[in-house]
Length: 220
Image (cartoon, rainbow, N blue to C red; front, side, top):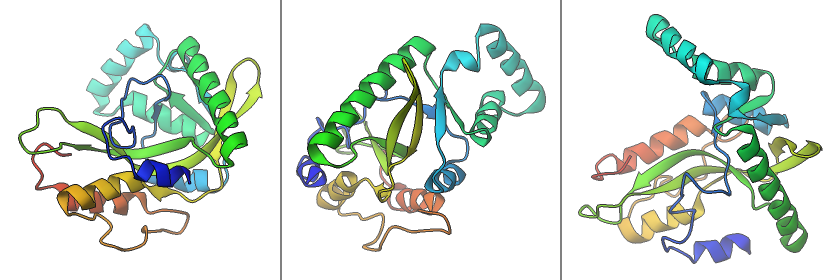
C-alpha cells in the first residue's frame, strides 16, 4: 500500500523522483564498490555507521591529497573500502550531525513499522540525473536501486548499525513509471530485475539505465 500511494505521485514533491542531497532525512555513505557491498549486505551483515571525523580531519585531508597526487589513487575511497571490510560504513557527516540525523531516522522508521508494518527506510545505490524536457534548466536526481534496511541502535545515545530488512531490493518503481509514461522508455525492457549469485546485479542495472538514457540531453 505504501508503494501504491507513492506510485501515484509523479510530482516533483516526491523524493523518489526529486531527491535532495542535502536533506535532513538522509545520511550519505561512501561505498567504493556498490556491487560487492550489495552482495555482502544481502548476506545479512550489519554495518556500523561512523562519522566523517573518525576518518579525515583537516590534517589527514591534506595528507590524502598528497597521497592521491603521488600514487594516482584515492585515499578516501581506499579507507572507505577498508572500513567496509571491517563491517563499518563511512558517512559524509561530522559526529553531531550524523547522530542527530540517525536518531531522527531511527524514530521515524520505528513509527512507520508500527503503523504500517513495512520498512520505509532505504539504502540507495546509484542515481539518475534527469530533466523534464530538453529545454528545462533544472535537473532532478532520482535513486535507482533501493534496498530496504533497518537501523539498529546498538548503544545509546546514538550508535547505530544498518542491516538488510530482509525484503526484496527494488528498482525505483516511481522512476520506472515516470520514464515509461513521460518518455516512453523502459530500462528493464519489461523483464524482471537482473540478479547475480548473491542478490541484484547492480552493475547490469546501471548499464541498462545508461543504455536507454545516453541520448537524453542533460541526463546522466
